[in-house]
Length: 304
Image: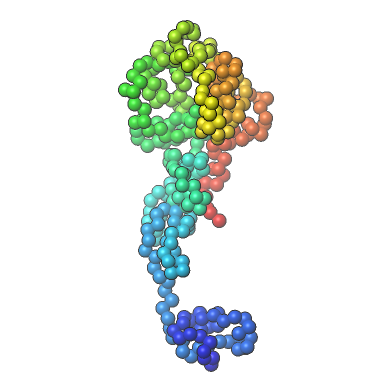
């Protein structure tokens, strides 16, 4: 028996020899026991902190801590396994098989701004998107991504006058135009205030606007004077999301398209990426075709 090699009241693991170094065990022929050991309760300390979806409580250095964990999403004794177990599309256009897995990824990647856009797998357009009540599916103007827009965010009393859309239709007000998408979620842009007209004329546009014509020969008021820092600091410019116009040109971003229509003195409508001209770089066409759903290759996301 070896005394003095172990402190009193240590656990079984320490008494069995795992507590000692290789050099010490060589001197003891590979065995080390302590007669003064007794059975010690090895039950780990229970962690009682509610960490929320995608995290679990662990005792680290005798301190309760919340750690990112996608395993918690599959735990049978976890409340997260009892709800939110349906696929969803997140704001980064990734499809997750549950909200818990999205929260786990959000925690691991430290993406605090990540949120659920809508239930179900990420879609290319609005045809198969089921939005909650009091919301309507629209396509983001410069990216073509579907999102659920709360109707309450558009106040018809703020701008109650009729407006003309770039589709040549007169709407009761700008909210009526913005909340009237087609089946795919596309909505017209504002051509000009008031009922639709067939030609440009004096005072049709505001003082800071220019009247030009669209590809369909309809008058559209565009803005060509922006603050000096607009193009450098606008979010739509800084994202550098390439935009395809109906003039057959692929623009660096939406703001470059705005410049283009002023230079060409015509309204440039954003068209679907699939219908970009055939002379566009093939790889760019493939990228655009799959840009919304590329991550659907990993519908059952699991962190490694």
